[in-house]
Length: 69
Image (cartoon, rainbow, N blue to C red):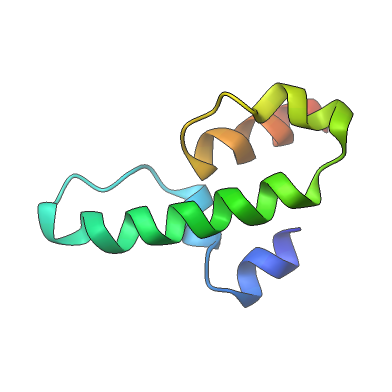
C-alpha cells in the first residue's frame, strides 16, 4: 500500500496533518479523498471495520499502522 501511495504522490497526505492554510485546502481535500479511496479498497474486511469511520486518510493510515505494529 505504501508503494502505491508513494507512486501516486499521496504519502504526504497520509503522513502529515491537515493543512491550516485556506489556499492549500482544496488540493488537500482532493488528495485526501484519493488516498482514502485507495486505502479503503486495499484493506481486508477485518481491517476495514477499524477505519470505516475515520474521516481522513491520515487517521486511516495511523490506525492501520497501530494495528500492524
